[in-house]
Amino acid sequence: MNAANAADAASTTNTANGADVMVRIENVHKSFGGLPVLRGVSASCARSEVVCLIGRSGSGKSTLLRCVNHLEKPDAGRITVDGELIGYEDRGGRLVERRERDVERQRRDVGMVFQRFNLFPHLTAAENIALAPRKLRGLSRAEARELAVASLERVGLADRRDAYARHLSGGQQQRVAIARALAMEPKVLLFDEPTSALDPELVGEVLGVMRAVAEQGMTMIVVTHELHFAREVAGQVLFMEDGVIVEAGPPEDVLVRPRHERTRAFVSRTLR
Image (cartoon, rainbow, N blue to C red; front, side, top):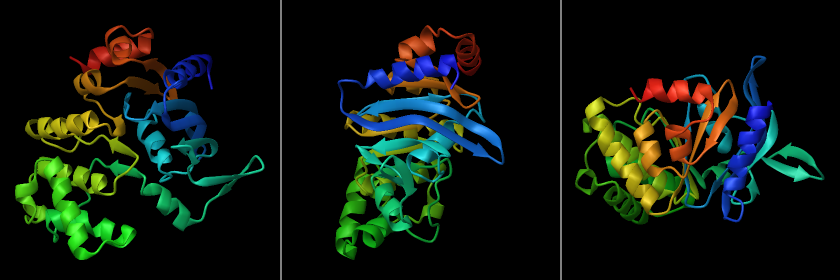
């Protein structure tokens, strides 16, 4: 970890000191084919906090997010969610990978919304949402249907419960994807560029739902280029470049009064 990353990571972790830390990321490294993508990243997210990850494509944001629910396995370091080590067990200081069924159990607590909606086009909105609670939580068909409808109400789509996914707009499909994640009652919700695949006129409706979910107290980590959203909603903003956290802090500091030249250059380009 370079000096800038170490200092800013420390300040990021300290933000949650004295608070109830939900996600803790400690010195995480990840390489693909010998190419380092994450280089000693440390950060934390308090319960009910929104953390936004910003930076250019290829800076390591999505990889870091995928490490939080073990879709990517860190080469080194550790990640805990609500105090539980994700993907590994600590046996006398040695990390041993968990069995896949244990990792799947952990993922139920870490919901994820992807760039693409990943809905089944031949299922209705409610059926897409009810599928995981039935398969993973053992709910009956009626119970899962009731939960699906309640989740659709949270994202303003209760009237589209019986519409097939292929008949929904991109914004509506992404809102169904958010409802699907919420239906599993996760402890933390991860968003990987949730508006990047949408037409510009549909972005606002998805961001509105995300604001509402944040206001309801959901812990959220969001990879985004929507800096106005980050400024309004985030408790912390982390600017990443070349696999490290260059700058971290409250949005007014990082987005309005950035200390680092690389942060200033990124923000000025993105907010034009």
